[in-house]
Structures are given as C-alpha cells and as structure tokens.
Amino acid sequence: MGNKLIVTAAPHITSGDSTQKIMGRVCLALCPTLVASIIVFGINSLILTAITVAACVFFEWAYCKLMKREVPIADLSATVTGILLAFNLPATMPWWMAIVGAFIAIVIIKQLFGGLGYNFANPAIVGRIALAMGFTSRMASYPLKGVDALASATPLAVSGELGSGEYVTLLLGNHGGVLGETCAITILLGGIYLIATKVISPMIPVTYLGTVAVLSLIAGKDPVVQLLSGGLMLGAFFMATDYVTSPTTDKGKLIFGIGLGVITCAIRFFGTMNEGVSFAILLMNLVVPYIDALTRQDKLGIAKKKKEAAAK
Image 1: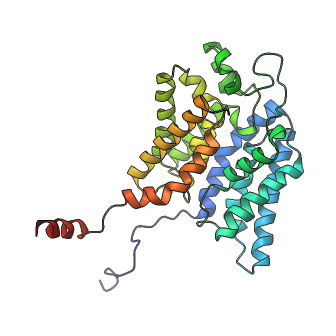
Image 2 (image 1 turned 90 degrees about the vertical axis):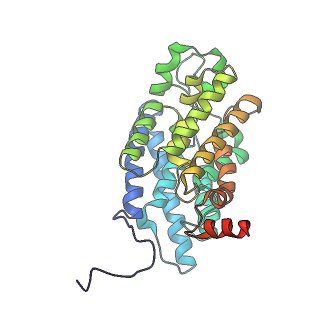
Image 3 (image 1 turned 135 degrees about the vertical axis):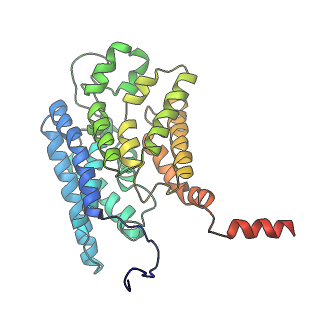
C-alpha cells in the first residue's frame, strides 16, 4: 500500500518507445521506396542513399566530438535525415553535392541550433532547398526512362498532358523525378505502416492531402495527378509529420495540414516552379511555435479565472 501513491512531476503517462525505436520504424517504412528507386533508377539510388546516410552520421558524430557533447548517432535520427535527403535528390546527383546537402542538414540546421529537438525546420527539407538553389541544373537532371512525356521531366512538369491512363505509371514510379517522389504506392504503404504503429498521427497527412485534392478540383486540375506526383506523398507522411517541427495539438495539426495544402497548391498553380512541397513545409515549420501557442489548451482553472474576472 505504501508504494501505490507516488507523487512525481509530469508527464504521468509515458511510453516504452525510445527515439531509436521510433526512428527505426521510420527507416523500415522507407525501405520499400528505396527498393523501388533501385528498380526504377538503378544501383546509383542505393549508392547515393548510402553516401548521404554516412555523411549525415559522420557530421553528427564529428560535430558532437568537436563540441564535446554526447554523440547521439545511436538514436538513428541522423540516419533518417540521410535517407530523406537522398529521397529528395535525383539518382544522377554527384556524390560531393549530396555531402554538401548533408552538412547543411546536420551541422547548420540541426546541431547549430542544439541538436535533435531544437531544430526550427526539417533538416532534410532545408538540405534539399539549399541544393536546389545552389545546384539547380543538377537537381533538375533526371534519369531518362523511355521516350514518352514522362521521360525527362517530372509528371508535374507535364501534368496537362497526362490522363487517367497514366495513374498506374504514377503509382509504380516509372517516370523521371527524385528518388522518393516516383513510386507513390510504396510511400503510401510506408505511411500506412507509420500510422498503424502509431509513430505518426494521420491528422497532418490526411488534412494535407485532402486540402490539395479539394483545391485541385476547384482549380480545374486532376487531383489524382496532383496527389501522386512530385514530393507530396513523401512530404505528407515522412517530413511534415516530424515531431520537432510540427504542432503538438490536434487543432494545430489541422491548421498545419491545411496551410501546407494551400501553400503547395499556390506554388504549383501560380508559381514558376512545378513543385511546392519543400517550401510549403519550410514555411509552415517557421510558424509552428505560433500555431502551438494559439491552439494550446489552457491550464486547469485558467479559463475559469478569466471568466470570473470578466464578469466582475
């Protein structure tokens, strides 16, 4: 009886899942897409992924050693960043450029801000944007897959030429693009696995994808092409749901997902770029603290005191 009433600090509900276990599940969920990219683009996909993972892990280890911090590479967060970064690159990307992206993601965006849990944006997203700005031609150089409209461009670049007959191609990934934006079906399977294992909440991806579908219909675009093309699926399930850079409340996640969809469609439909997922996630990452502040539940008794004060 003496040990049944234990007074401790919050939180009082805990989970047996560690960062390593969660990141391990994310890695497992990404494996089908990695296999699909190897089938579509060849062994270069595997080599590029290995390089970005090794670079991310090395930069995290080297920075922590240099700053005399505890080395956290065993938590697999750097590994996940490396895989996601590779999935945002074309298979023809030179290895040294991929290493530059890894340095930006791990050292500049993650470690300089304090490490895991303190980064203001998704490291892999910023790595992709930096490479897209610095090496534009290389980031837009995709392997040729035949002679049709999908050969040398992503489906978004030729979306006006696509019909319902191309849906299977979009699902299977037999078209140009970066490693993680081709085979939509494997990304979807990985996302379902993460939701089933409760690694992520379905709120953000469902809201994000739903917003894009509705706005596509309003704009007269094919919603299926918009959903299955570009980095939307990868971004919705694996990057927008990052614990550190996404809201913690259900209302916040709803607002976050809608904001992602609106910005993505605005860039795709009215901007000069075909893709808008990366910039949408980065911009919404920046406002997450404000979303959390506005949607956070009041502490017990606070709302009551406010009402009493207003009544007086």
